[in-house]
Image (cartoon, rainbow, N blue to C red; front, side, top):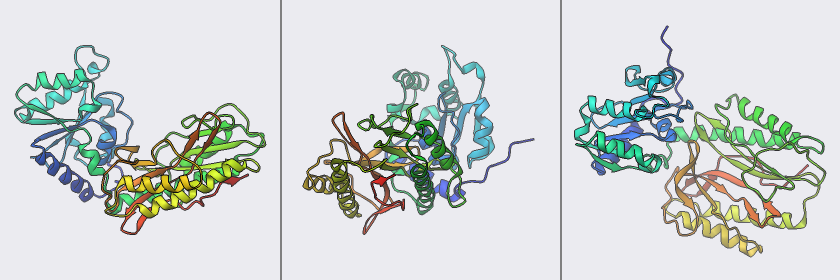
Length: 389
């Protein structure tokens, strides 16, 4: 029996809208065929979220075809048919003989499709920054009649402005993030293992919120005393102690979309230093959200935060945030001083205000928000508190 289509996260019209925007950008760059290989961009243009990107795969977008063609490992073909909005005839599975083959691989299968369709006479766009140099050279040599154009992040910049349908999905992810953080507040206690608390958080992120389950689990960072100056450490075998501080960062996931959230918790009364840092960070957060208006720049948001934090006697070395959506980070706009990216309605960012000072001080708080004419509108509803347990 043929595998059925899954219930789609978005209507066909939404995917065609995205493809139309991508094709307009292709025309602007004089590109007639675009080979999309980054998993997040493949998700954006097709609905595919299966974890098959560890081997070569590519979504071929042609100006002349309404739907793209997906070339993937044969065993992953059914997942593509199931999840993607495209017709099953546009999914091509290459044989297992191309896996761990030193002479030919899945990229050869993608090039074969391009050659068979006669598209090698045209200009071909590649996400070259995310491809090994040898693979880019393979495209050049095997598609010798084509002009290879670097289209790194061409799709990602288009992803930056979300549709209202995407915003709705990110709100669902945010509700799951809130639920996970509230669960963390319930289970973190003296004598509890970090691993057991993390298991409860993961279970909540999977179960979801408001009747909407999580559809994936991303990284969970739990940096507890004595590791509060770290930023990307997961749980350990340690047990929470009275006086422990716990810095948490994770996100709910809905159909590939994330809405990350960070909060600091303290078992017992936090130090005066951490409390003062918290007060400065919250003031800076509110100033940054107020500055995140249509027509302002990413730099304006960062300046608003940094200047406010300095008034409280602190500084933050790292950037204030980044574009967010599918697969967490979108490698485009950054909330840092000097980034002149102009903010547009429904751009979405993780206002990431984690602050790690030396090797003994760390504190985190964040909001995922969308840009509006009135400022940044957070998706999560969790209080901006330094949680005392």
